Length: 366
Image (cartoon, rainbow, N blue to C red; front, top):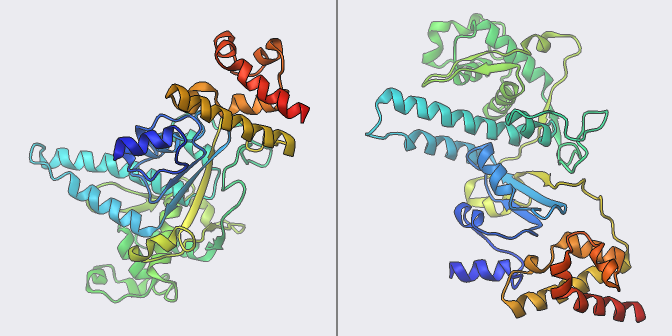
């Protein structure tokens, strides 16, 4: 069944395939136009490879990542349980767990950031920030953040309160205790801190625990805070902490609507945040066909599929979509013109040239 599904998808007999990570990575198809992740991968590296299944022929393609907070909880729970390995000492297990936690935190940051997704990715891999961007800091591609396809929430005062609370506790407690102090909790585990004497005690009493955690996590991603590693992570000030007390400080985060895991199917379209990232070697919209060229392109694709079935090969082995689009633009009817099409050489001309040119001639005549 698996081999049949893969064969039907690669040969364009079916337009969509639902695949596990491992199955999806094994699909060799250059003209995949849409990759949808139904939940958050474990790392940027995994997401980069999996999303990279789209647009391998260089044509604009879309990758959509569907996620919600339950993905993060699940990933962290799996991470903590995966490394109880008897072959490793407790210290070695902790080293592995910390390394995996750093990878996961970077993936969470990618989901939550409001900055350019391309730049986030290039910075993560240590590459140059220049991604063909514009003067206003946006990328030239089709990043969903730069296109601002999400809603934001002004959390300036929440961020200020969190920063003040970190100061009040001398950068010496974890996220859970900070949340409790800000919400005015009288939990027994806070008594040694004498929280009621702090200016920030109860300052965010009307703000949900989830919202405070969201803001704190995003502040860590953005460099305002730093969360230490270890079994008991401590919240400390980051390199940008001073900005939170500046008069002009303003802070927004993505609006994240929550849904229960049992409603995940509906969440993908409505209540779960959707982060789209264009994967393409060219700018989205660099090819905008007119109606005639688009109609010809579809006819050329039909002919390509017929030939592919005749020879028992995937359609992209005959010609890529990029080649067919260039063919639709040039409309070659002679050998010289056909060789001018991107991706066409003497061998492809000999094997397929006459059939494609005959189709173009018939359309031109009609």
